[in-house]
Structure formats: structure tokens, C-alpha cells
Image (cartoon, rainbow over all chains, first blue to last red; front, side, top):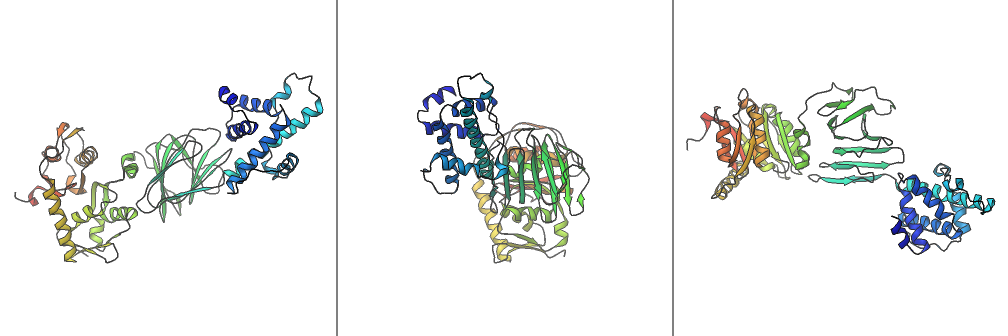
Length: 345
Length: 105
């Protein structure tokens, strides 16, 4: 890293380097110390830092212009930033013996340095404005978040991500997602899904949010569950292969020994179902396909099937249904299918 | 309505024809277990789609399957101890059915 910095010749390049380094909330202490040393080296450093920060803010507003503003004005702007974005920063450099530098100058430069970092953190928090990701029907998508966690969205799903310095918050607004959470004990990872909040530190879990219920399944590690709006968990910890179904009345009993291959089959674009009523299997296909299957026979809907299918191969599933004596499959004229049974209604 | 069924059957026959000459061979490792779980594992390892009425497989266990099999030879071996057989729905899908309702050919 030291070699990289030497190569950065111009002041603005160096300022940009520090801007990027310190935006990382996990920046090491010695990096912060090095920055303090560098920034106190000359007033031009302070000015360059503020320019970089301003350009960065401008970029995020799509208003890209190198600021011609004077250093004084930049400092004034930084000071006027919202109070909650100001975080005290004490340059370690002040503890070093530096007798030859005049105290007032050191104080002034130190203040400027703390303003820069505060402004930087403020902008960093602004940049961590919620980001949304979504998938269309039949689409799947994997997103690697800035903290290294990976979220894989299933069909017709939507999340909103807010990564903060002390907290990682994801709203599962719709659908299903598998969360592979990067370990960070200092920053809990919370997923809000309707009535429930699932909190992980470093683990893998699936949340399937439907109209009337939300299913939480742990693939690896452990998660805590909280009722939405509460700060502490009164619900049991969930371990791997455990599942809880939450509905309007609250969480149900913990189910153990869940078949994870079945729960995560969607990640391979597959539906795996064991002893599932045909009606539910049809509903599964309908999640992934625009052309919906409607089964009109209650008896047929209740019949339990076992099998493995690709999520988008509705045709093969319908072909099997059509092979059942008395069962007829017809196009509904709108891209979907109606399944009726002559023998049972 | 009947047209749609005829259409589906038509697709099936077309795929049946295309299946033709060289059936793919898979390296399978399926331990002895309840038959329904073994069939799911077979689907996972071979990539073939499988569907059956759950009650058909109740009470059966499968013999272990180790080695190189086609879908046909693998399913025949898995179902050998049961009163079940299978039929191709299309080139990538099989249905497990009771032995007595199987086509006589």
C-alpha cells in the first residue's frame, strides 16, 4: 500500500486515495493515523480533501463539476453539515512529540482534519441511502452488498438495503431471498419481513414472504428472531435445518430437520417437492411463470405428489396432469391454463 | 379444450421421437433409502424431471445404486423391488406409475 501511495503524485490524487480508504468504516487505526499525518502536513491537503469530498457528493447528485470554491467556503460548508454526521476524530498524531510545530497551528489543522472526517462520514452515511433490488416473474438475481454479504433474490422479489456503520438492515418487501451474511459481530444484519425481524451475525438463511405468512429457514449458523418493532428477542434462536412459519398470529412452533435441498432448490432454478398437494405445486409454478395454472378440481388440488422440476417447465407438469384419467388441460386464452377433472369436482 | 390436450400429447410424441439414439450415461451414487427420497436423489444427479403421486412410493425402500447408468437403466434398477414402473412424458420428464397400468410394450 505504501508503494501505491508514493505513486500518487498530485495532491488531489492523494486526497482521493484517502477519501476511498477512510470511507471504509473498518479502516485500520494505523491508516487513520497515517491520514492524520498526511493531512496535517500542509493546508493544501485539507483543501484537496474537501474538494474530493465535494466532487464525490456532486457525483452522487449527478452534478459533476470540479469545485472552484475557495478552501474557506468548503470548510464553512462542512461545518454547516447536519450535526448528527459529525463524529469526533482525534488525530493520533497529536500524541507524537512534535515540539517544533506551533500549538495554535496544530489545533487549527487538527480541527480541519476532524471536520474532513466528520464530513466524510456524513457523506458516507448519505451514500448508504437505501438501495433497492428486485426481480421480475421468473427472474433470479444475486447481489453482493458492500459488506460482502450476498443476497440471492428469487422470482418476483424486492429488497431494500441500508448499510450503516453499526447496523445492516434489509427490508424484504416482497418474495423470497437467500441471505449469505458476511460475518461482522459489530454490525448485526437484520432482515425485516412483515411481522418478523431476523437477525444474523454471519450465517445463511432463507426468507420466503407470502401474502399471509412468512417462512424463515436457517441453512447454516444461527439467527435470532424478533417481533417487528421490538428491540429484544423473545423468540427462540434458530439453528441450521430449523424453520419457523410466522403469520398474523405470530410465529409457529420451530420445525426441525427441514430438508434444505428442497428449501434452496430454487437457487438451481428447481422446484423440489415432497408430499405436497398438487394445488400448492401449481402455486409454486405460478410464482415463476407469467402463464398461471388454475386447477378447478378440489380433489385434484389435494392429491399429494413428490418430484423435481425446473421452475419454468410448466408444460411438462401439465402434460403429467393431462395424463391422469378424466383430467383435461385447456388454455385460458390469456397465456394461462385451466385444469378440470371430469371424474371429481 | 381437447385441442390443448392434443397439442400437449403432440409435443410429447415429438420429444419421444427426438430422444432417439444415444441416451446419456450418468455416474450415480444413491444410497439405500426410502424410495421417494432415492427418486429425488436420482432426479438431482441425472437432471431428469420426476413426478409421482406420493402414496405410490409409500412403504418401499430402494437398493443402493452405484456406477454408470442411463435414466432407463437407473430407474429400472431403483424400481426393481417395487410394484412401480415409469413412463417418459417428454425427453426430460418421467412419471412414476403403478406397474399394472403401465403400457404393455
